[in-house]
Length: 286
Length: 217
Image (cartoon, rainbow over all chains, first blue to last red; front, top):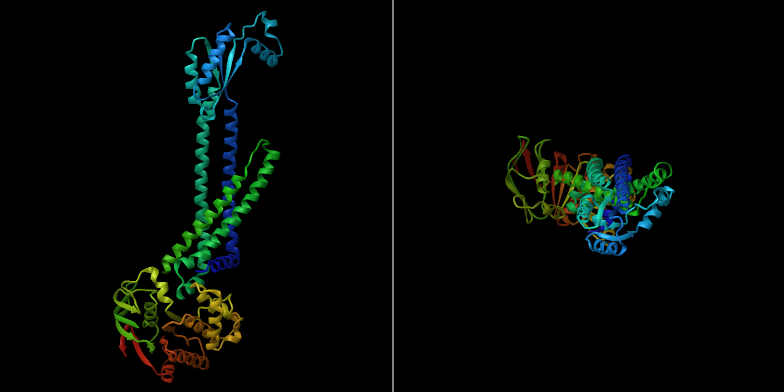
């Protein structure tokens, strides 16, 4: 059977019921803008959390007066630990320099001696940049001879782990709800379009067109609604992002994948909605 | 061949047809007559399997109402042609496109469509109006287009539901002449009508229905 006929009929149908077409596309656009903004929100939260995790480090303080040779052994041991990406040794002298850089005064001049202990600064592999892994690691290292203290941003990590998961769940849940709402909205609009075109369906049925053949133009039409709705939504999201980047949050990030997802979701919603509507109608007829 | 075996049908608790039995043979011309609401159109719907009997069986060529699968119905309908009183033409398509639509909807190739549509439009004398829209032609011409669409797939039978119901006497006669011509070429015709004068002018077998029952043949 001719696919060209289905595409042609789908395109014709698209231009026929202009009001219904307008309402359907508007529904798709609004739903997809919301979904797209949710995707970008999730993307930005993910980026922010990633940055926080990336810059997270664990500092292992050694006993004051620890000899450099002994410290090197600790460094080697730390490097062998699972999840450790890099270890940087900060000698007592380097610690004093860091102090001076941060506070503007030489600790040796203030106190007459350098009480700052040598330390090892650890960076963790991405999979270990979470509260439970870093806490476990800190507990191991704390028991080692020569280690006086282990410091890391545990509370921040715990907060991130707890709330980010919750936020993702909320965003995901709202996204799914919106997808369902959009599908129902478009399903209803397409149902109206199908009822408006009952004549053509009836004639197709009478002349012996198969169900698949009758369905195809409506599926083409549904996909078109999704495609056009998705493209418009992408345009609006892009403009909104630009405005937000300029006036609200300069660190805002966006990627092309989000726009592709919005477009793909549009096509999917259009396809599923029209499939549901036309099947329901044909089940009544044939 | 079409066979009705003790066909009964109720819709919403109302008896529409009761124990209808008849056979229609290849190339036959028959009328189904009776007053409005007698069940004439229902008999046609049972033939193109838009509805199914509650009791009994309808057989159309190799298809039986008792056994046919939903997916087979389109293929049964390709063996039939159906004409209605209200023409059922697509208002936004030309005469040519209305007829071609029957072929396009069944997946016939474009090259073949043109050849077949031109032939059938000539057969019903409507080729001059091929590019006009249904609103631009008369009732008689619309019915010719509907007949052209019905016969384009070379059906073994044309089912006509009050095809002259909306036409004046002159146009009715012209339409009947077309049906006669189609029948002479070997296509069976089963026409639902309550127009006695038409039956007298073009006499053929008559199946008379009253209140859902066959009262005479």
